[in-house]
Image 1 (cartoon, rainbow, N blue to C red):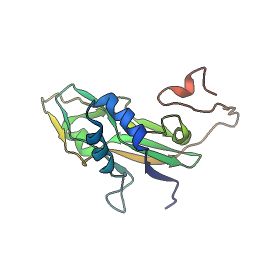
Image 2: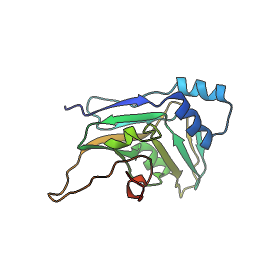
Image 3: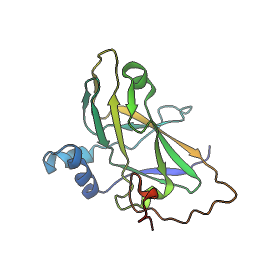
Image 4: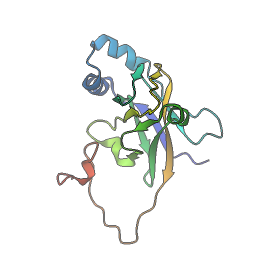
Length: 173
């Protein structure tokens, strides 16, 4: 197998800022959460997906949504992309959905102003009334690295400096 990427934690300062946006709690508690962040891993040698683990317990009733700051960034070689999906079992049992259907992490996101911090926004879309509980440290999403291709007449010359939607903004440098 070809290795094309590596996972890292974002800095504590970046995580603190981003985590407080979703979960406004004490800095000392956030530091403990940060220290316990697990880097994504494959469960078996045949797994394509790298499991992303939630840094805190997540409880979602049907129809509820949460933005999870994972504390993770990924260096990705040019020509590859990281695609994020819900873990299959959670999707099957609870209709756990990513709000953007599939997360796309481009290689240049790593160098963005937020350190390439990967957020995963999920919704419990259960139509059976099932509440979802994902314990701290449990896998809730999976990422798969894929090669991508460009057209013969591609002329992209923009440089990313931001997160969601930044590559379509006029300010893209």
